[in-house]
Length: 316
Image 1 (cartoon, one colour):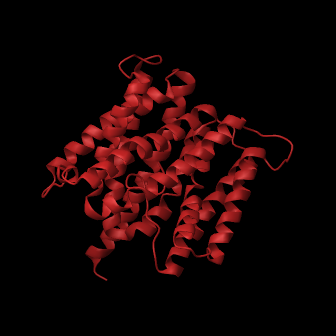
Image 2 (cartoon, helix red, strand yellow; image 1 turned 60 degrees about the vertical axis):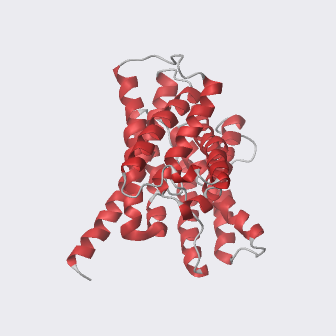
Image 3 (cartoon, helix red, strand yellow; image 1 turned 90 degrees about the horizontal axis):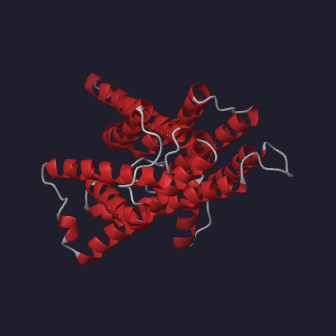
């Protein structure tokens, strides 16, 4: 193996890990905006999709041999990108951010990480085959980790609200749909084109409900910094460097490295926002993250790959 290849692999690892860190911190920034600046989650989702969508579409246009307009020339593909933007992008963005507003960035991110289990279930039904043993183990661990995270090991009470649990699980289901629905589009068009249009369409459609032109929250330096971070680092840059990492280390390794995201969200929330994360919270988190590692290994065993999200690997 040449030194140049070694450098590329190292670069791929750094890029994927950096993307995961950026996404995790982005969730904590969202928690800060919701808790301390009274920003409405739906309002934030609208602007995140609108601004990031415009930037990503512009980036797709600037690329050599751009396919950004070709996606609209086939009615079937045009319908699919509309469905992805309205139902995939909006659902995964809003459920995740709303879950954060009901609990915290760490818990919401970890709960969403059970999404790959739903993806495995979908393909098991679609392909009419039973999951392999490693996938059953992953399912058991996902359920165990979720139980510890939301109950701290007791059967008679929840440590977060029922609404937070509901929206967290809904975010995981939305992530599964968001992962599966654009697969055929991604075989024909570049990820920047699919993701950029998805965000822009989602932002425009969701704006009809949220009225983003009406100001939300308390706007000061801290608000602007957190908002800017979510758009620039937590969306555009994270997306770009994650895609770049795929060229060097592949989707499976990059997806596995993205497990750093909920740890990033937890650590920054504990240090910055004084979130109390107990031993049971950490244990539940690590158990759920173990499902990602097991599912990644299961893909290699089956010599086939479950598609990943076009924006952020396995997680938003």
